Image (cartoon, rainbow, N blue to C red; front, top):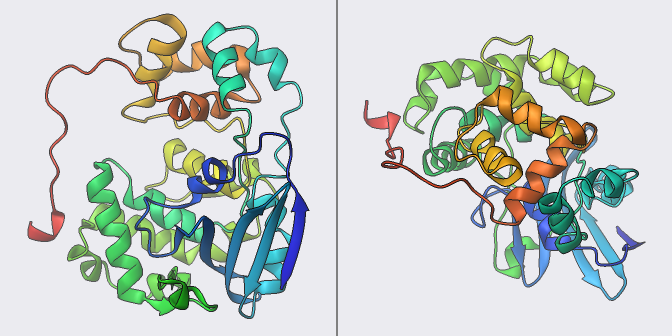
Length: 303
């Protein structure tokens, strides 16, 4: 199935849908020859979506049993439903945010509408380095690995579908240990898998956040990471992040360090788009000065 959609002025496809891939080696999503490919599990079955630019349009191609459902919301996945109403006025209140909003005006928030695949990644990312998180995520996907539908293997890449929630829920925690997930995160993932069907039915970011944070092991950081790209929530702030509070304090107040409370205080003038401001800081490469050694990369599989 194919759908052509008009792109807004200065729209940046790679920056927008790139938020959906966990590095360029993500087994479920990546760029191939300028097109973005993502394998997902829709309510109607497995599907693969391809998004590419063609002049002033974004072209979506869908494959697999869930292609019709996926192509129907391809505009949301591509961030074309993202509503920036009122953000320009808010951004103008701070010179750094105003500059970033102009420089990255083509950046949009995607909204996939699919929770569990993103929640898997977020749980893997809890309290570890990005390298550790990616290793655990990729190993988990490959363990359950089911080839995605579509011609992606012929394009030079073989995508895998994210795991079925029911399979994850039925897997004992020690299976995940060799992937680098210790029992705490493995148990959290399995509890989330049990509740996956209810999470997928959530109508909006507020309901999804409420249901996710009711699950032991899932807090506001994990919920915000999920709803930002699943529901396209521009106000989702990752409270509890290791880097973001410092980046916000440095960018908005010139302070090299800041906790969650200070971050939320500085972001308050941008309420409704607080998560968007954090995204712009990341897109602009703005980070606080570093002091001391980096967190070491470990492997729980060897513990």
